[in-house]
Each structure stands twice: as structure tokens, then as C-alpha cells.
Length: 92
Image (cartoon, rainbow, N blue to C red):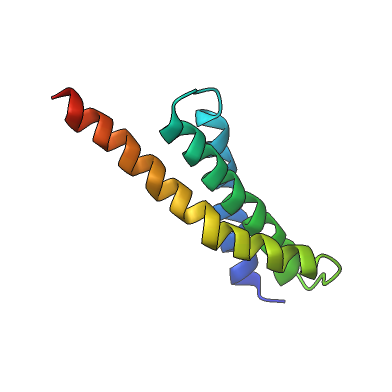
């Protein structure tokens, strides 16, 4: 059991899911991409909390979620930020 990693993954999970919930009702592409990205990171961090507590039952799901969050979630957040700021620049 790695207590510091459990704590940091738990905080990351809470913050990511909170942000995803805050932006879920928006219909723009940037908000939708951000929602999926933050939700993927929040779920994988929540599974990481369970993993680092020493509970290994969900390890296959945890490994998939981490891969999904890193290869899909993080780029979606980046795409959402780019789309949002690109719209701001085009309006000026």
C-alpha cells in the first residue's frame, strides 16, 4: 500500500470528476471534449486509489482506464482548450 499515492489519486479523482460535472451541460465541442477527458481521468484516478490501496481485483480495468485516460482523455482536454481559445481569437 502506497498511502501518498492513494491520497493524491483520490484528490485527482475528486477534482477531475467535479470539473467534468461542472461542464457537462454545455453543448459546444470544447466543453464536450473537456467533459469526456476530465471524466476519463477522474475514473482512472478513482480506480488508481483502489489499486494503490492494495486491492488488486480491478487491476485489468484499472490498466485499461489509465491507458484510455492518457491516450484519449488528456488529448481531448487539450483539444477542448484549443477549440475554446480558437473561438475567442476568431471573435476578436
